Image 1 (spheres, rainbow, N blue to C red):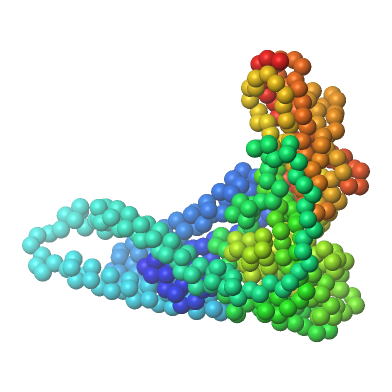
Image 2 (image 1 turned 180 degrees about the vertical axis):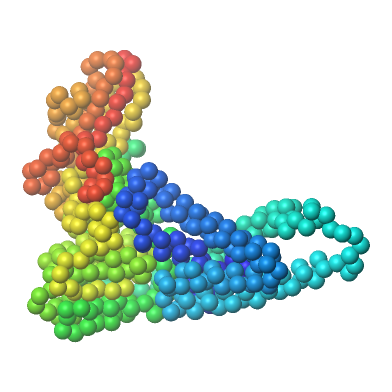
Length: 496
């Protein structure tokens, strides 16, 4: 019946979703900050799948309890209420369209459950009682039947989740509307500086541009919102003279901007991989704000997403020409996992300040704390100067020269130089920098080194931002305001 609820909810409306997932998302948005931080630090990418699994298991256990009680009380038909329970649990967090789809699925599930109970009673009803039932025969649980039911239920639910996901993407996926997105002509991207052969030969060095399929994904959505571009609207209100309700076509009518920019997650660790670079397409947020006419007294702009996430930027930062409403990556529409049809793209801030699946912009008269700020994380979320050693990896090495290389990033401040130490920080030597794609993208660096002794070597690196400030050597975990410290590798040279 869970599968019936889920699949019919998806067929009825693209906004419908699996009730356990909706309820789990509701719990995520209301969980205490210390628990969120602890889960992310200990479990990382496993946090949300585990949350969904545990929530689904808890709801199934609750449904099993309701069914068992219905049988013990002599009213097995009451078990038909179980699918309705699954619809009512997440109801407070559903919008009208989602609630309608889930309610339709719950009604069908309740009818199906009623019919199952009816058939079970008819097939199990004895025509004649031949002898007094024993204690074993009076057992309310048929263990074999229960095991079969559990296996069948889990299998059906898994199949339903797969079918549901495919239905959602087929109903309103960006792949269907890609041809309908008429990207306005934009000034051509400045030609890239020639990439030196020395950088090209380093196989383990990070690519200059991240393929969209490899771009890091971190968000708090258990199930990414699948938005129909035909019905999507962006509301601009609050302290404005002319409230706006923009369609996707309206957004595309604004002059387009295209640029290379790096995005880094605040959860990125020292030497971590939650950082990527691509070519973004969008419209300057200030142009939308000018069309709405900000009123005096506005201090911040609040962004709200289709999944319930919210964030804010100071009015000055939001009005800066570098802040975009992005709708394209690498010359194509945003994918679902990256915020289709539109997201915010600010500069100098971690990814938490760049909400996906944007549906509302509101100008407010007082500071606003977004989802992660209310959990104790940094409000400005300014990117710290950071670098990573990509090659060589730790381990044992033979004789010969070495190329030490990696990437460095400092948000909108740029990178002025990178230094490498091959003696655990006692001395430092300047590395070679490759020209960056833009002032907002990472820089690749390399340092050619010939070991002069055998034994253990500890390699460290540090970067200097465009303002001439070196990254701090003091180690700090990612939360609450971003990781810090020097990246370090260690390897043993067998011979020189």
